[in-house]
Each structure stands twice: as C-alpha cells, then as structure tokens.
Length: 219
Image 1 (cartoon, rainbow, N blue to C red):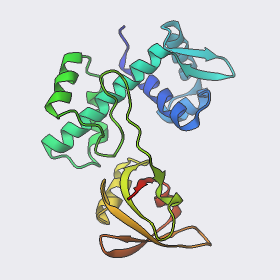
Image 2: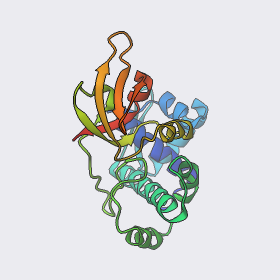
Image 3: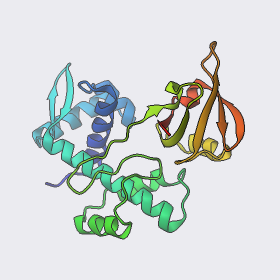
Image 4: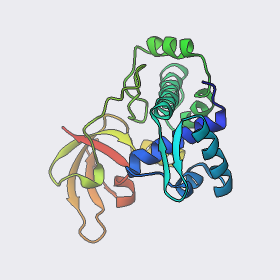
C-alpha cells in the first residue's frame, strides 16, 4: 500500500508517542511532535483512518492498527539502518545522522533495505543504542533504566540516549560518553538529585536533566 512521506511521518510520530505514553495518542501530542496545526493533524488522521492505518475517535485519541504499526516499525527500521550505515561506513558522527536518515527512511525499495541490512551484518542497534526492528518487525528490547534511577556504588554501561539532539550528543562527546561507556555512581545530591559519577577514571557531576536522558544497564 502506497503511503506519502507526510503520512509516514505521522505514523512514526504516533508510534513513538504511544510507546512513551502507553495510552491513546491525542491530536495535540501529534501536533506538538511534528510541529503542525491541530486542524491539519485532524485532516491527516482522517486520511490515515480511511486507509485503515489508525483508529481515530474524535476527542478520545488515536491508535495504530496492526497495518499501521507494521508500516511505522518498517519506517523506523529503515531510519536506524541508515544511521548505522552513515556512522560505520561514511564516517558520520552520531550527532550528524538523524536529519540525513530522516530523508533516507522514505526510500521505498524493500530489496535495498534487505541488502543494506545484510551489508551491515544485521545490526541490532543504531548508533544511539535504539533497537533496530528485524525484517519481521520484531524489536529486541534491552533491560535498561535511566541513569537518574541508578544506585550509589553500582556500576553501569551506557546503552542509549533519550535525547538524540545534536546538542546533547555533542555534550556527551565532550565528556567522552558514548554507547558502551562504563559509569559508576559515586554520590547523589539530595537537594537536586544531581549525580557524582566516575567516568573513564574521572569524576564529574551531572544534573538530573542530563541523567534523565541517558539509558544504562547494570554491569
């Protein structure tokens, strides 16, 4: 079934919002995510509902149908594979790839994506630690927590980020933090929940705004 670039962006946005909220996705949440007027969002939702990609009940919210979920997951699969390609094969840094992958994810050729996956040796995660759906749309979940939830005295490995903006990723690069970096929690400030962390043998203090955007798993 043919979907337009705009429709694909909507499906992806609805998927991401639903994953974080776990409830019906509101029109306002979609409008905020894609920076569009609520009236424009409503018009698009009607089109997606007509194609059986979503269920849409006015004033209640939106859910992806199984067809819509499969379409959204496939778009995400393409995006994350392209990010791996850009970093591993074309020497992009992890803070440069998102916008380029946003353009490449709309390429329709299934053969190209299958061959790209094989060329990259079937990666399971993108450069930001996000899982790459397989060709059947299955996603391998990682047992992870936010760094802000980590416990004093325990050691962790960085496995992902929530904020994938260029500014945040450059901040992490500046402090030599990336996927696989080991982090030990030395202390937590009771007042503002900032953390004193041992990273690469150095001690640094991170605010909760930062630790809320880093995923880790226990070593």
